[in-house]
Length: 394
Image (cartoon, rainbow, N blue to C red):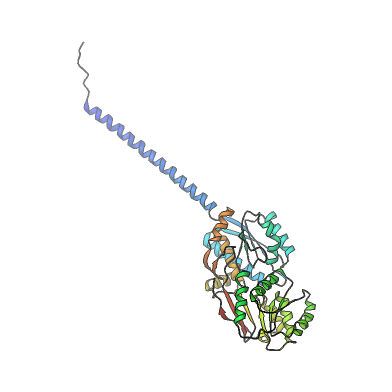
């Protein structure tokens, strides 16, 4: 028996090693390929999930409550037309779809509450835009339990708080103090100033805030809600021999009272209006024939420089020029939807950070979720409302 070791071919060892290395390389390439596919799938899944949580889902249902009849029917229609215009622009921009469910509250709290219940309980909307003040008063408590914030069109008379309601128009505490300060500086005769207001939560709230800030002496008169009784109210006011009259009135009643007063007071009596003369300008034209009869009258109104892009979009969708508050309707929808999030808290947080140029002006919410308004003073000259001063934005 031989003690010699078997002869090993070095070449075969090298070939075997090479084959093993090649197999390992192939396996590594396969593993890397599989790993890459897994990573791609994970990234895609995360991206899909983010699109459906941080941004809008493919279709959303948004409820809208607005006064489409009654004293505020015209302005409610303008506001809703602004929303409809924004919906088209938003869908084109994002590729998402929004279904609007629109309810008419007629400017009445009871109808507003019924509309709210229908939208939240029957239609089960994903968000809600409310327009009118009295409806907000009626729905405020139940609205706090909704799984989403509410965008408010007109102003809140009683519930302006750090909550889930965001208001796209003027705020009492940033408007009527400025109006009062402006009027105190004017040179017309205010020695016998009369403030007349409607029996209405919105007008009551405006008048109280104005009176608190005005400070100087005045006489307050509460006008009847009965249109037939406004002639008696006019006689009562005329009997006070006012040098100036401040109106905090619903549009139609304010127009009727103005017509009756013009027959009883001197032509040099200064007429001063709240925003409702703008809201219901057609009522005044219908009652007076034209606005030349109140030349010299002044009013305050939130208004920005004309936004040509918004005007073009509006005319393309609605087929006519924007009316008063159409720009606010547009901004209400766009701000609301651009910050949409399925998570209520995240949606609210995002809305609070709003700071952008909108159709109605610069949009920035204060600590109570109310947009800081762009205010102008208008005067009736030659039968037309003309801007005579822009108040500081703050």
